[in-house]
Image 1 (cartoon, rainbow, N blue to C red):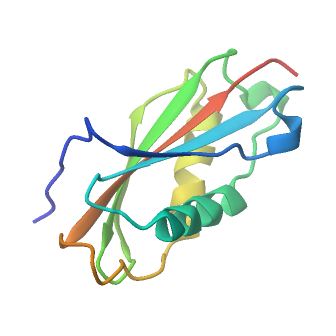
Image 2 (image 1 turned 120 degrees about the vertical axis):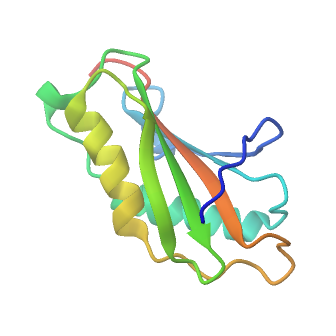
Length: 133
């Protein structure tokens, strides 16, 4: 049985999909992990895999400026993606589908660190459109 935990004290790994392009326009990806995950290297690895699978929809598929999709994922100890669902919609079905697809295509992830104490890891991926093209 999968268990969902809220992430009020989530560890933030906030990186930008295109760091040099942020000032101009584009998507922003943030990843939030269960606070029990202390490994920054593991967080960065998961983030990089999802960012690497991101495929931005065409111009008609962009949400309004500030529109954000949140994908909640649960990873098993072996790195397998146990579930991934859109929990916040951006207002663009194409954008939401692209965010979910990036998480799904990034799997499987590396096994959870040995010092991680839980059987599963909750991760939230926020994909926002931060300015207009």
